[in-house]
Image 1 (tube, rainbow, N blue to C red):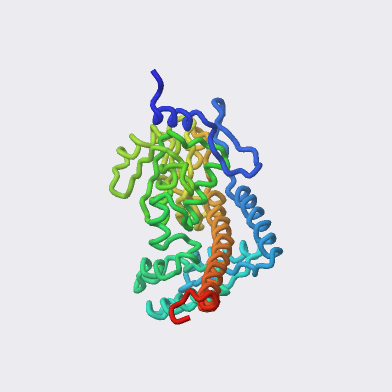
Image 2: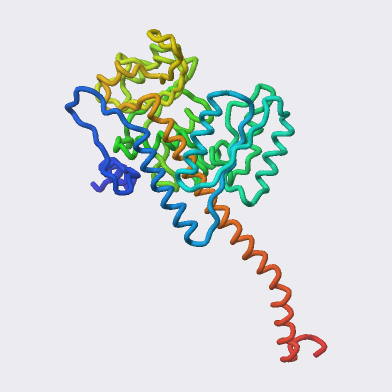
Length: 368
């Protein structure tokens, strides 16, 4: 009896090699024998991506196009936000993208910030635009994110970009989730048919990560074809453990130190730590950055693990650069379409006039 088309298609997809976006880089694969996890260097992967972006930018400029331009709006004096923005502008310079940082006081009104965003939306020199989060409490972050033009939204936070992503359509992908995706695919970690747990359901990180990993990879944007479970703040830890212990991939983006411990994962699982938490070092009493994962404990059971810092963070910045060149190319494409449409509109009266003269000459019009 012949297999149904559905079964044949499913078998083909499950048996094919894991897809990756290595662009010629040899991917890593799971090994059945390993004393501890391979520590994935987000910095090295980010350098690969930035090199690709740098080449793309130079080819774009060499073709006669203007150099891409990124505007970053920074509100207030949050030290972490200032550090993140500095990393982004340094990365922009590294890949050949021009950038500016517009700093505004924490006292800026929501209306003033919206007016600034509208001005940047209408500035043809600006290809990419992002507003560094978090914002002061008196400002509605969702309203601000949706005020940024979807075509310039290099953070991928606009409701239109989120909606298109949910519909498996082309969109500006959120930088951190896209960075997680690139880590998984460039490392060669299989996703098709695998069990994945995403701890965290934030609209900008956790949910988009789950969306990218579970949707159909045959569409025009990335999709991992995995079976995804999402946990959140109301998921009891024992319930979370029941899911993570079965997971092939665990992604933690909850912002809770030591949320994921060694007893919660199975041997050989891949663990991606998206959490960024500032804690006091118990030995030095100085502040330090940690993720959501007990790194030293989990690395003894996992096959792959990302560190904090040096894991997902550099990838987020690299994907922002990728989104900026995408935005620049899209802006050029839109401009050419508008120019073509404008030319057709201006030429239409002339064409009609020529046609009328020809018909008059042939005597085909009434009264001739």
